[in-house]
Length: 332
View 1 (spheres, rainbow, N blue to C red):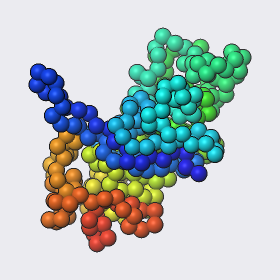
View 2: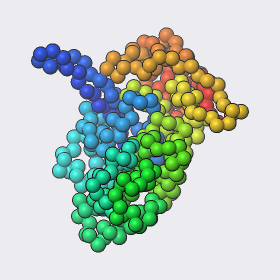
View 3: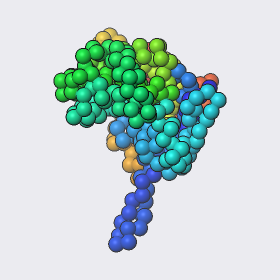
View 4: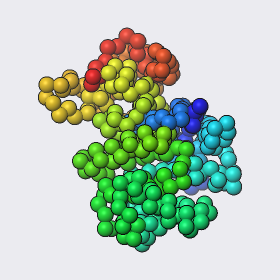
């Protein structure tokens, strides 16, 4: 059973001008995104900065109101709720089932609260008795490999990696069905990133978490995701199982992202792919395929006809007119 199903999700921001502030255009931050996450699965949502990844995650959590589309969430087996347009009174009981791990471990924790109170806050808001809260805080600290003494200290006493562990503990306090991790390691040192990734892998195995892992670094998501969805200018251009996507990408943009992943062994470095130009403007995207001005494989059809996301092989979806004929380079 799928925990989350997103269908044709759109989030547009109006551009207003003139004395009467009339709408003269729209920024299409998210423009027709569809995907699903099965129970116990981690889907990575990747792409360059500004492609709409974080906007998608915030629409799912209803931090932003979607312009249109469907977001179907299963807080428990046998029950599915449509989140788009759901009144706040009906939405509030669902929030305990979907939690977020934030990007910045420094600004996401209240500096005036002790760690124990930070982790216990979602429990308190949801009516968990005080005695149970304290026991649960100790359990969560142990789960994220933090000492029990941490509960009586303030966030400034901890490093960035330790703060992110505290943030993870808070996100797991209510045993959510879905966790949205928004660039959870991008603000950390490389060595600390590895520790947090290993922690998330351990939690996936122990808790069977369903997770949307938002990132821009394909070197990171390779280790934590079951499937990868690649976004470009508000749309998904490729979805595939992780190992398949890294071995044989089917969209030129995916190939470009893989080519940018650093290879520590010079003997294993692949060919460099020259991708020129800037990311397309979501307020004025080019006609046809949005990636065609930067694509070394573009043909005339790419410039006039926008490709739709289609299943080219079982479990592999790509929006590229030449997906079946191109031999693109992966990273093995």
